[in-house]
Each structure stands twice: as structure tokens, then as C-alpha cells.
Length: 453
Image 1 (tube, rainbow, N blue to C red):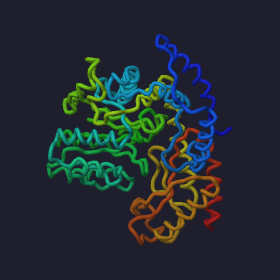
Image 2 (image 1 turned 90 degrees about the vertical axis):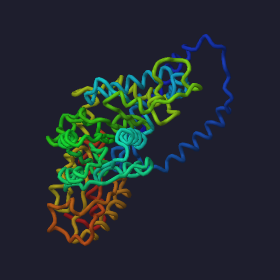
Image 3 (image 1 turned 120 degrees about the vertical axis):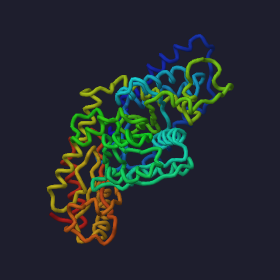
Image 4 (image 1 turned 60 degrees about the vertical axis):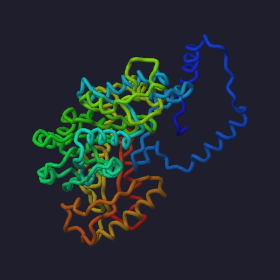
């Protein structure tokens, strides 16, 4: 058996306990189809789901897809029998409280005792709220983010009617602080987005230096830690990345995605604000929704309305099992991912067949096959990517500026400004134990396309 199913045994007794809580009610009969018909449909669903890459397996080292923890799956499924809606306490009393507790624990991980925040559908929605608040605080001013930041920031700025500008990145994919200083001199910047773990290369913007610039220029500092945020618990970061993570508490707002390294099903994002007073920006009244409690409804501090309470239940259960403690079991999983990336990088850097852009800061590694030109490298990357898939090694592709290979300028002709590279996201702790096997598969795939040692 490849797919985990032991957690299914947890569901039935938990469902009985849930049922006991409503024993005072008369029985209810659900209007459902008979089991035989449902079984047939479920088998059809299972067969259709074969048309997927094996995202859950260690031989999948491509995109940012990490399997949920078994307890997250079980708790999410259990919650669907109630199907709570965490927009208002009326629709999800228990799950709303669980959300508040889980969000408070994430906030504490970043060093905040006070905060305003909630869960949402994912990083895009979370970043939208953060930039919306920034726009309300600094109306008419520009939003800045690195040219390697997620494209969602420029898109969201357009949706919100805010001016956006990209700041050049350095040779390691981080925001160039010198370039940022020049842009800030214009005095028209309301928000700077610092990315702590870009989705392309895992690069970590120099947050500590950006914090110092905020002290002078007074912009809202938003930290997009959707991918990298949990690595604040890791014990094996390089000094530059550690300095950035140690500055997270100095941000004005932070986004993190529990559905990435937080072991949650999609979609589960989280947005946090250091100053709870920004809640006044959200203030609205909905008498037909908020009527049974004087406590704060999560919908009163959110742009989203209906939101799945099951996401909060799953996150709360996972954090109950695996607390966000430095040196704990959950933190150890992040250390394993980071070590897997370092080992993968060492294999690549010591092999003459490959060119590596730069050392990984988190658990994402980017490299390209050595060839005479950027064009030939790009063609060969695509071929090796396809060959690897045939060998059941699933990688990803990314197009990066050739300047990211600045240390290898003499190694190939820069006949274009970008080069198609191979990319691995080694976000499963199991990757660490299987690096040698992954390397064998990559070497076989490269040899299939004529790339020899």
C-alpha cells in the first residue's frame, strides 16, 4: 500500500464522539443514494484521479505540493459532517475558536503577542488583504516588490487600483537593497513587500536591511512568507537567511500558507497584522449575519465571507499534535527538507554536467545542464525534464535571468536574457533519505538525452 489509510480508522470513533454531542436531538435521515450507487461513483472518482502526478511520493520533487498530515485529513473530514462556516460565529462556533487559537499560535511563532489575523483560501487572498490594508493606510502611494516576488503582487495591485513597481533583484534572486533605496528616494512608496522564500528559487529578501529603510521612509512593510514562513523554526539556515527570519517580528503584516509547509489540505492561507488597530479598516455591519454573539466574528476582519471551518479544525488538530516549537518534531521536518536541498545542491555543484545558479536558502534548488549557450541549455533542460518524467522522477521547470549564473559567465554564451532551468522543491522530509536514489534517476535521465559525465 502506497497511499496512507491508517488514519481512516481514527475517523469512525471520532464521528461517534461527535454524534454523542447531539444526542438530545431527534434522529435525522439523510436523503442519500444507496451505497452501491455511491460506491460505483467513488470507484469512478478514484480511477479519474489516476491522471495526476504522484504529488505525495518522494519521487515527486517538482512543484510546491506537500501531502497533508494524516491527522489533518482526518480532522478535515470529520468537520465536514458539521460543515461549519467560519465567516460568523453563528455558522462555526467551535471551529471559529479553533481558528483563533491556531492563528494565535502562528503569530507567536513570529514573535507577536498581539495581532489581528485569520485564515483564508491561500496566499493570494492573504496578500490581497495585506495590500488592501496598506493601500488604505497610504492612499495613492506605490507598492514595491522584487522582480522575483510572486506575480500575484502586481496583479493584486492592479485589482486594487494601486500603482506597482518591481525592484531589481541581485544575483541570488533577492531584492537589491541599493536599488530599493533609489526607488524610495522619490517619496511616493506606501508599501514594500519583502519575500521570505520566493516561490521560484526560495530566495530570502534581506529583511533586516529593509526594516532599517522603513524607519527612515515610513512605508508599510509587508512580508510575503507564504512559502518560507515556517522555516523560522529551522535550525540549519545560513546566516543571511537566519537574519531575515529573526526580523520577521518587525514586519507590519505577514502572510503564511499552512497548506504548503504547514501540512494542510488546500486551501489554507493566513494573514497577520502586528497592530490590531487595523481592524478598524475592515469595520462593517451585517445584522443578518452577526446577531448571536457580542464576540468578534472572523468575518468582521476579513474580506472573504464564507470560509470553510474544516480548514481551521484540520490546522488546529495538526498543531495540537505537532506544536510550532523550535527543536520539536515539526521543526525537525523542516530541518530535513533544508538538509535534503543542501545535499542535492552539493551533488549538482560537484558534477561537471550541471550549472547551479546559487546555493539554496531554503529547500528549493535550481540548476541547468551545461551547454554552449543559454538557448542550448534551455532545450536540454526541457528534454531532461521529459526524460525524467518517463523515469518517474518528477521535476519542475523555471525560466530565470542568465545573470543568475554570473559566476559561470564564461561557461556559456548568453544569447538570450533568460534560460530555462530545472527546479526541485525538496519539501518532503523523506527526500533527505532518498537523495541518492533521486540522483541516480536524474543521472539516468541526463544520460538518456546524451548528457554524460
